[in-house]
Image (cartoon, rainbow, N blue to C red):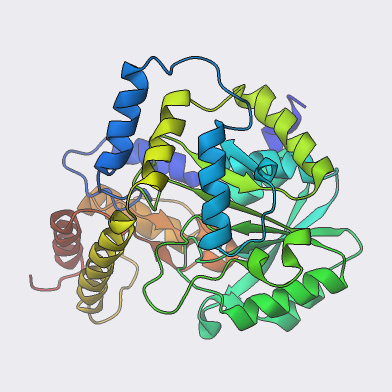
Length: 377
């Protein structure tokens, strides 16, 4: 296994972080981290847990109160038909949920159809479990969604899983209920599993977020996972969860959870209790401000006219246009971003900017960008 890991790539985001740390006063639009502080309900619950010495080993699958609250949230908000709190496993962030699910579900050589572009750890975790990621393009002309006929053509006798990510990271595309009904039908008719990544469930500005496991019969073949990171601004605290109905898969996942973490930080779990016991007002407050930041940044990008073109000299020998542009913006403008190709071949020619930063940072990045491209500020 040790040498096999050499073949699993590390996301280019790590390289970008290293570049950003060499800059003075950078605009950190490269990292998908909201600038909000965790709500007081979270911080006070964690402080109380420390004061009450809740700093010892706890149950591997999660403290009972948190699992109860998560199960209730999944039933009432996501409409996932969980009938037993044992389905819930608490993890060290969403990426840990993805890891334990891939390890518990995949056999060597199993194919997993993933969106392209997609959050880089998806392909990495499939590979780490000795699976084979198979990219299926998200089409910008379809609102960054799959062409479902194209998806069907990707299925082979080796296909084991469809990886569904809505809202999408990095594109922001959202599958409708009708889309998900068709995807669930495709999975059922081909005897496939669905892994449902719902990290951005609360960052939907138009329309609704639909959990595919809520559709009739879909939870039987779907493993959804979630995180507190985006909804409660808890990125650094590392708290996520998954729900697994199948007892065999769940038992495997619980073993992997134990062998990788023993148990998730007791204090952080009590912070999760505080989040779910408290009022959900922060979620709507965050969403309202994020919508305003999106509009501000999008308007600024539109003001860069004529459309962007590659600078004559970027100082990069990379064959990738998106990497050359990324390095140019970082080195010449102190503007953090991520090349689209890092999310998959279909992302080439695009850049990802995180607009969840403070407004002043967004404005600073836009002004720097306009200077680089000769737009009067």
